[in-house]
Image (cartoon, rainbow, N blue to C red; front, side):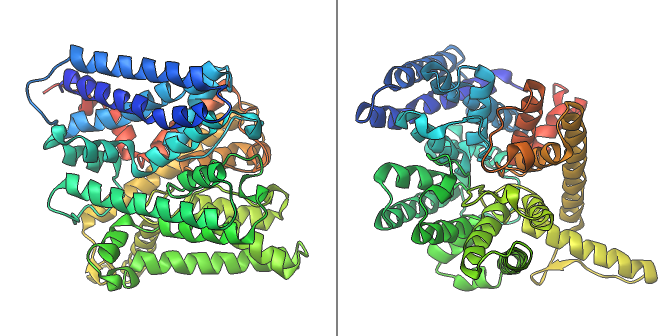
Length: 484
């Protein structure tokens, strides 16, 4: 492994992070300016450090192998969060660097868990940076890197594979991975612009429309208000946000075929898409019935809040319109299950993903049939296509690793003195990149009271969930580090 190559490109990425801070800096200059020095200094540190690293470690051969790409992907999220935390610390928004790092990592991994107690009291430049980190993380820092820097050459394919292991691996959308990244980036940008315009039409101020949009498309969950989307008390805004949460939770490859290839049947015939929509309808219906019968909410209120929260949690966005921490145990348990399920593979969401649960269900059913007649040959099919055993075993392995991580981290959090509801939901919400949990980390609370060790555990879960576990856990195997 050529560590020099990894550090060289990491320097380029750090410089890019510094450039992205120009947007909140410009906004700060035209608003209250209280955070302008902090953002300016952060840009200088990031640009200087990145360019210094890039220039001091020149390389002769462009590109990188799979192993180097994996290391770059993981270290990119870790390093980007380090420099992304500087505006919070230097502005005084989060004097503790651990909290600042937690907030930045939560942004880049599109988790949406926050340690800010009073969001509305923060400077607008800081809040814009907070939402912008989610927008950058939603498409994937590395996918943006691949699209913008063709200098990476053949290593781009390895980067994309390592950063987005949940996509359609058996099928490239375009001949070159850089063209694929650009196409997906255009879709991502188009959805961003469209939602922003619609939110403006819905009456949101420009700043609020920007921050909400930058957090909706990556299904991240940060807003500039203490009460999330509920602060606007607008049915129109909630409907727009719901529609874009659903859209962002769909495999972006299907968006590509719909928009660029004009093949709507690829979307309508996709098994995961149909199950995804069916889950939204079913869970929304169950939750609404629960709120009407057992919480005695009026039909309109139940439909409004139940539908929004079901979709927000299933897509792992984490926006809220009400305090679901006060709901019945069954309603909260249902939301907890949705945090584990997640949206579609190839989307910007986290958790296990719908298609994996579909494969696991079909695999389990096949094993039941084989127990009765072991000699029967039963191919595992999804959408009419036979799933290779290698893909099935990968999904089973990921599910085992997911629940093993969940259990171990839950035990650690419980050992820190947290109650079971808080300990479990904080791990599930972090591992699924959801954000708000239950108990002490509910939708009207923050992660401020979580002990430092607990925050470390949850940050590990955020990265593991964003990179879908294998990319991170491979670094802990001795075989990976054997130099050859």
